[in-house]
Image 1 (cartoon, rainbow, N blue to C red):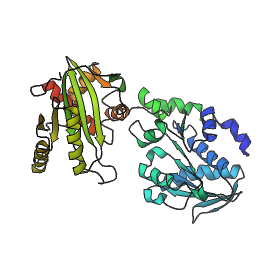
Image 2: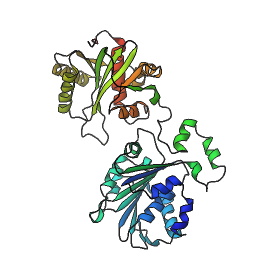
Image 3: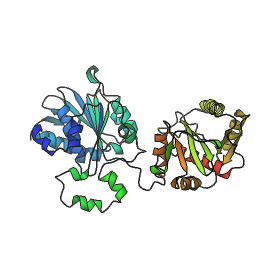
Image 4: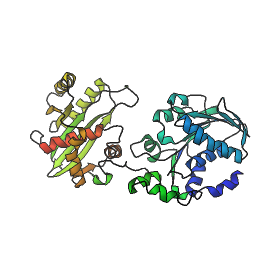
Length: 394
């Protein structure tokens, strides 16, 4: 089978993916939509003579049973395959291009020689660390290499959405649906669709990035406004002195919220991974910017260490209206009053750069990898709703 005859099998999104000039490109698709076929074909048609390429899958079993099997079958049918060294997991094509196959059970396995290009199959099951290692290897012969990814999306809180779903310079994403594949059995779509809710079918069959099934908040609940009116205003901090600790540490988040009548406005969010020293500097700088009219709250963790940290921060913020607040109940229950008001249309966001990341997290809990913005927003809301010590902005 020659490359030209394969074109009749490609849908327009698949064709566009295989012919995109973007450095980083993704094909997201539903189950059985032909993602792996396109990933293999894309690499075969781009492989240049005597250059090295990498093919990756989340596990060795997936690499052996699906990704590599698809690639080898297609390369053989196209008469592009010259040889395969199983011991090295290395295929040599007719133009002397080499393709190495690696699993990502351990992201460190992605380290190796410089590459002219790479394909990650089922990228949404791969840790971001592996992606970051692979893109650092795309530099063979003094040229920037390319990367393609094929996967079924895993929601807006996943790293694949940050990289491919949001778009950006030299990034292109294409979507294909399960129903686009004309080679599936006639009953496949109907049989599989019966196992999904309408919401989950958008992800698993249409290949769309969606807020995860079972999330407690919806994106449409939160409308944006250019600015907030005057009213009671607070800043609530959820501190996490975790800079440099672990692979994916928590964030420090400070949410500023204003209440006007029965309406709440999220006006500013400070978020980052900071060292203890940076936390003190940032908290003091934000307080100075907000002004003494804005009350400050912070979550007081249980135990003596939590009390000591709060005491230190209160001392640092001397002259401001500040106190530590002990958490009661689980974080889901603490956020329920806030979400109830949001669902009723009583919560607005001031339009700003932080909106997207904030919404991605809020609408992903309890499935989100981080919930620091969730905790901080709930804390600010509860301060305002309970009243008593928040000051009115003049």
